[in-house]
Image (cartoon, rainbow, N blue to C red; front, top):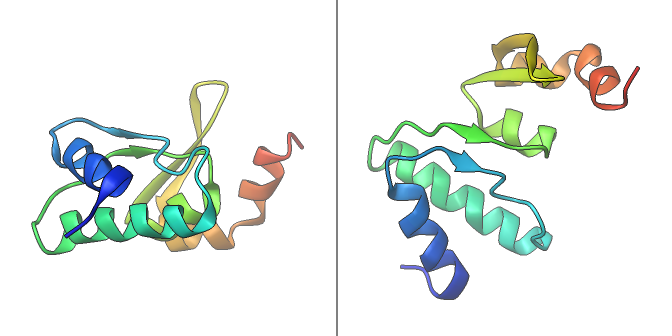
Length: 96
């Protein structure tokens, strides 16, 4: 199904642990592959994915429910698509 790093990631993501920063340090093509793997685990295999992701657009686009943290505290919460459209999310990430 997947090879190399993607195969390693698929094995890691399928463990019963949170997925921490799945896109960090990856080129865009690999980021797409990682989120495809996560979508497959979620939809085809019925897995619940708990993810920490600083790439707000990718993380919230993927999320059913998202939380935006500031200094370790929940600043905003809601459906991922709603948070993507919320201008406060951008301001929080830019420190405003």
